[in-house]
Image (cartoon, rainbow, N blue to C red; front, side, top):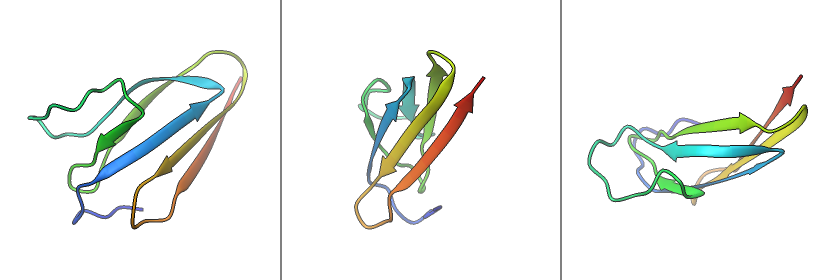
Length: 76
């Protein structure tokens, strides 16, 4: 869900793969790209996920005030 009017903490968890980085387009921040959370910028964040083996990667994203999102990727 895109909510360009909000800038708040977004939490992400990855199972079956590795979270390499999580951030937004905000050019000036003290947030780390290596945590499982980041503050959105204009309602957006970007995650970089690496497959560690074949199978499924389950990505869960949540933030206060919006419905959580689940994404499942199949790796062959």
